[in-house]
Length: 449
Ligand code: SAH
Image 1 (cartoon, rainbow, N blue to C red):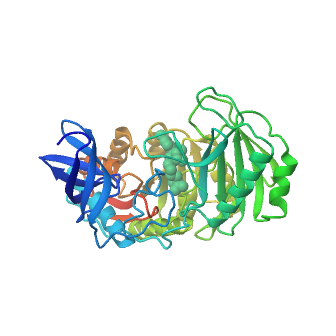
Image 2 (image 1 turned 90 degrees about the horizontal axis):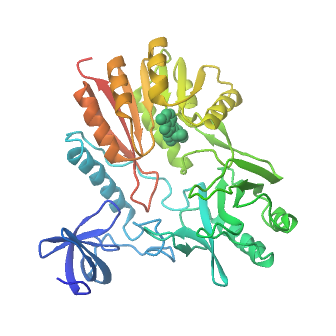
Image 3 (image 1 turned 90 degrees about the vertical axis):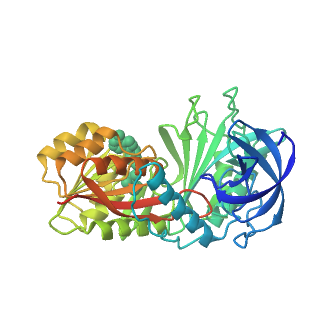
């Protein structure tokens, strides 16, 4: 096999990023867009010592699981890498992936359930962040191509609400008519960097223009484009981000139209949402995720619950309804303020929130409180080893773990096992159809305890 060779390949597996994997001359060959069970023709575009990369030229024998991706930029945009796979097969892939992580990384023999399917396979997200770039005469607004900072222009992202498409087309009019200078990453010049859109379940939209500056030209034209045409746009914000950074949002936001926030309901509770608020992006599945957690954790009205990595208190406040008392810990001060606000908004007086690093705050909270159940929902990197050790030595009877990364979940469960805590079952919940991402819930309990 040489570079540029055209090879015929049988695909027998799907990689973690959704690439088809076949074997030729003892080497694994990764082919984007190919599916297990297929015979394909691919051109070898990279040849390394231990693997090769092929570009899919032709599917000779298609998989019965192959579907026709509805998105015009499927394969170009780095977003949905599984749109060509039937939804049932996507779920199967996710179950296998989680099981594989448990066995390979954690050396754990934990049963992994079939994932809880999403109610909506498309149009499930409530938030989008589109980078904006000038490409010659054209303004591209869309998503990054896979492994790249090149932008693929997207006019209708099928996992976003369809209203976003109309907002974007109005914005394009404003950008072109007013010759809005578009941000250039390399020279750190130009104004408009990103467009962030959020929609709540009631269909109200917040539009955030992230700018490298303090103001935009012709505000009134922008407002006019939405005021009458799209009354569901309830909030237009400018977010000032003048730093040379990949981070989308800066610290300061100014409201130029409507309100500076929206409200979202989750599990019958209300949450205030601003430009910077972290909320799960799939609201329908978030409720399914939390309900799964609470069912598995079996909270009772006598429980004192610790919710670590609590964000704006979504899990904490839902837990407060089922338990005696909840203590939330979160590192982002603004999120903790929002959590306190949300507790008041929902008349919940049994939830307390503290700002700080879990590893630092945990020892004193564990000493002070008689905690009977712990919930952790850490970022992708999982739990600090110190946090696992502290929780295990506290002797708490049950720990609910919500994870967005099965690899770090497997690593953490292995350490918990060493320290005497076993996970009963892992329940994946599909929050992100068409992508390889998967959320998992598991509950650990003290062995012989
Ligand atoms: N439970 C929330 C948020 C989960 S996202 C929800 O369901 O919406 C993970 C959260 O962990 C983020 O809000 C992040 O700011 C927070 N975080 C990250 N590192 C942390 C740390 N060391 N200590 C406490 N919180 C942390």
